[in-house]
Length: 187
Image (tube, rainbow, N blue to C red; front, side, top):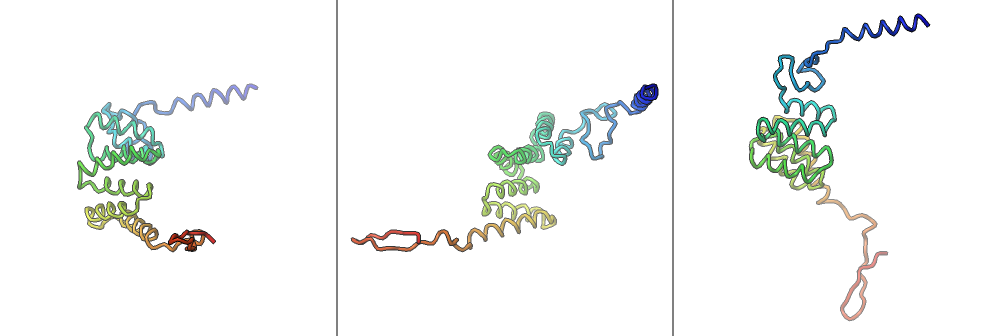
């Protein structure tokens, strides 16, 4: 029993060696930075939002992007970030509104075009998605493999819909009903 008490005291003593300041994690580490850096300055909400997106914390990322928008104004990166967070949360209409606003207000912002294309793919609008990915690919001068792959996938899905063969379940026979009328009947 005595050794349990001593072990507990030892564990509590070990816990006091952990730094307690707000800037304990480095800004460029894998964790989202705290609200204040070690020097007391506020950390950029866009940086926090992007880190939270990478960590899969989309609601928290949304809050960080809104905070950044309140501080910096609605820039292309912030609009695209909010739209992407909404996309990950399944809020497709909200996402589309924001991403379209981002590319309308900032037509040279490549990630906004790419994110809009991803949204359109999610909605199944492969024709417009391929057009949007072409725009992103052109603005990026073909430098991004991700955009190239997205464009290829959109074109492939668009063409698959356009040139797909009718399925066996959708075969019908045209049968004359008399008096100049015909009926489609499935066999």
